[in-house]
Length: 489
Image (cartoon, rainbow, N blue to C red; front, side):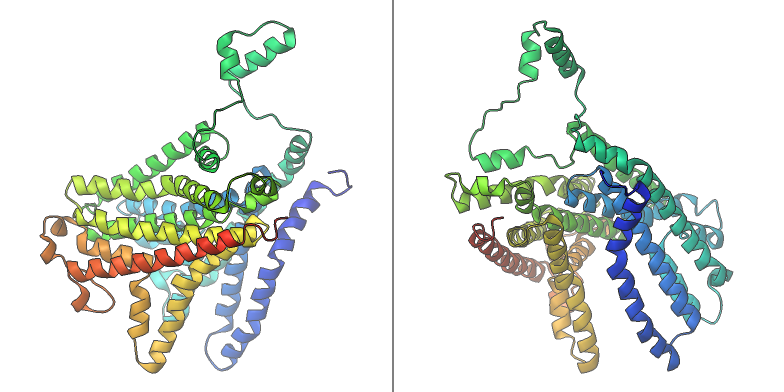
């Protein structure tokens, strides 16, 4: 703030310096696509349009996260906020508007309008246009993808303009000491102190900063850390908005008479599980790095608390902070179990699934948080582990299975995937036709085939998966404890 660098240079420099590696990655992929084009794989129009769609999506995501980072103090909160916003823009809004307006507006008109700001749909639409001889729904993609890129770049320019406008004001306000919003009672208390008058006892008690520590100090401190930075008011507002959004989706499903269908509950369950996985992976990876960044980690290690107490307190804090996200899954399942749209056995099976997900990701997050000095590095490492286990490995095994014509390893890997398990559980227990069945008549569709489709084998698979991942999570947590006193600074 003391240099002659202006706000525009700060914002654009921060954005494109961080996007440089991604842009280089896109540039590196261009010669490979050119080789495919030479051998007759894809036309040049597909290569250029796809690169433009990806580049515009990258710039928009970078602009959005940079805008959030101006007012944010914690990187993990900015990551979660960015992912949530992108999910709302790319998935929630198009789905709800599509369900509510498909009877009013023709599909061939509604579909492209809803997907103009969706790069995933634009890429899919681009691929369909290339593969099929005719244009999908009569829409020329030569006009569609430039409009999509212009919309994404326009939204990026708007976000960057707002960032340029506020970045210096926010930075200077934080540099000179920004006062947090306080209640009227606290402001009256400060005014009474300034005027020299004696505040009443109620004001003194309400503004007292001292709190009594009960039990383990680590657990006490972690239990009082807010899920959303900014106080109880923002947490309540965020919770209310999330519940209203969920009720809107329920209303749209009721309008389509789809709320008692098993496919509907499969989609809800998978979405809630993915939300829980991402939040647990992100929140667990900042527990120690946040202490290192604020220089309070050496002070904590200098206390009489041993490493096991610190590890237990941090683990309890991770569970408490990701609990609100998992409660959406619990509330959905319990609600529809009560109204007989889901079989009660889904509660037990999903509890087993959530238990090992939380233990495994908490352990890995604590380990990476103990290894790295920065929260961003730990979060990226934990998310990379998730993608490697449950996305990259199935893709590689799928390629190997196609070459060797042996699908056993792929089926085994897919059976221990949490997203697949959530879908299988709800496919066997979701919907009115399954809610009233006996346990012996429930049918689960596992990748291994119909032999594992009964209640008993399903419970066995879930139990051994839970046991294996929990042991791996405990191993990560133990290794994290061993690294507590290494590379402290």
